[in-house]
Length: 354
Image (cartoon, rainbow, N blue to C red; front, side):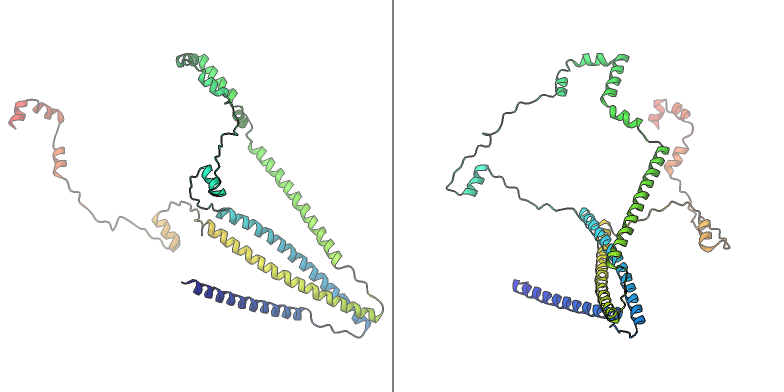
């Protein structure tokens, strides 16, 4: 495929994608207007004062309900966003953080590198060992002890007998004190149970504190958004209040619709990430099957039911095969007593004649 044709196909695909996005945006706007028309119809003002007061109370109650639902949806969106971040980290861990590029090995001296950077006119001789510090080699005590071992016969004589074994045992004990501490500090089953119960108690208290904090935040949010309603006494003020509350309910319904749409998008993203993780880990995990020893009669009884008793003889249809006796095996059986054969063959003349 030529580059011009590739460019033409790319432009066509982009134009089709742009048209699809515009159609999706228009469909979304139509759904939004339909939702607002259903949930927020045009306000019809009543004539009497009592009906106006009832209308104000009804609109105020609707605003309370919508704000509660909006708060719950915002919590769900925040929780889903955190889950998306965790799933993205999980996907990165499964795929690998980055792939190292394949680099070509190039052997080049420092002078050649400087000549390539500065140009052919600048000739620089670089001595990399000129500014190096002189460091004295430190001899470790272990190497010193290994060198000062001396004669191996003397060491064997020192470690032989009960005194030598005692010295070796004392040296091992003093060299590894952490192993003894690990064996001493093993937890018993009772201590494990008490620690587990303490951890569960701490976790329950933390969860209760977190739920109380969430309830306080919810009440604070609703108190800020929906203060208690104070009804005026004049008709004009009641009409103005009704119009104001109707505008507020329109705004809260729009926000609720946008948050609900965002929640659906976030949940779809969570589902896609979960599918991706399953694909990366493997399509399915084989279940662990238990080994069950069961006879053929018991299996048929389990399949057909307890009323049907079937005795299954697996050896009934087997063929009867006669065992063929080879001549070599017959000769070996007809050998007789080995002592008699040795006595008969002890005379070399008989063996030679035969």
